[in-house]
Image 1 (cartoon, rainbow, N blue to C red):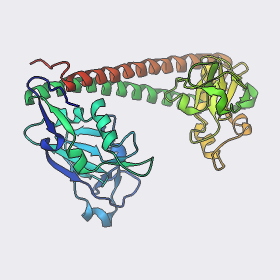
Image 2: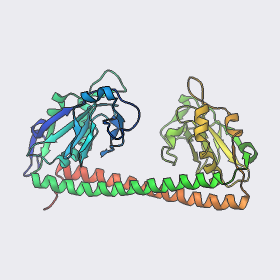
Image 3: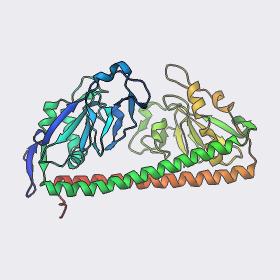
Image 4: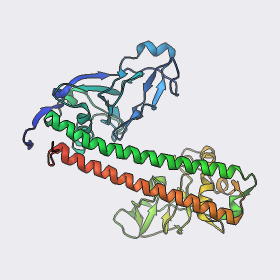
Length: 389
């Protein structure tokens, strides 16, 4: 199938644009960041969503430092050549030199020749079209890990605009990235404020009361797979923390034979699996699986009780046991939270609730920014929309 080449553009191979492609080395390292006089090796998680996260590294052991080979250099891109199916092929543009950080064997560092702007190439390699190409060339017998060879990567077709147009495209997309970074920073700051407010407020009230005295707990029940669907028939069915990834419920399953229903304002707590303790406030009735329990307040404001639950998440998670880690009703009901008078509970609940609502709004704005970036990338990198001089 022929590719329509926009006016003034050329169809080349990715390898035609690469000056150097350097592979890192596998070295032994501690599970901590490097300190003064040490060097670090990047984790594969240092490249995520088009961002380079230099903090995602490990301190190289002293006896291994002579083996590191490829330091992180500015005006290059780092490419994940081995990762999970969703993350293999991830890349990020590097703005500055990091002479104390080195690449592992699962990451490559790519520098472009005079034909290509490296930032533009990074955006190109983050596009949906390129993602589809990566899916086609990634190999591996394991369903959890895929690999890309240099030869196959170099052969991928690229529609190359003139160099000045590349730079204009990169500048447009970079401006969207800056807005995304700002939104992320705002969310992080507000989340930090919420955590600090919760910790300091509850620490100032040493007297405690058991959760059992303040609420009742409803256990979920498994609905057989043949009684669930994804077509919207019946009532929404929640099976675990994957249904509320960012603090909001995302319904993916339904059932026409519900067994246990939660009520609006119930606090849904994960009691089985890797997300033990993770919780969300139900915004409507849902059928809930055995992986969840619904905490129903008797008289305490739900927003206050929800924040109190966040203070025991780490404890609940540490107490989970079994082949599939889980906790019992008693693990939750016997936990104690600060005893605060009702008027103060309401005031704090309102403050906590308003702050969480603001964070939720910010996350919605962030999602819209990612959608804008995806649409702009598809248009500009394909030539459907031209970046005017």
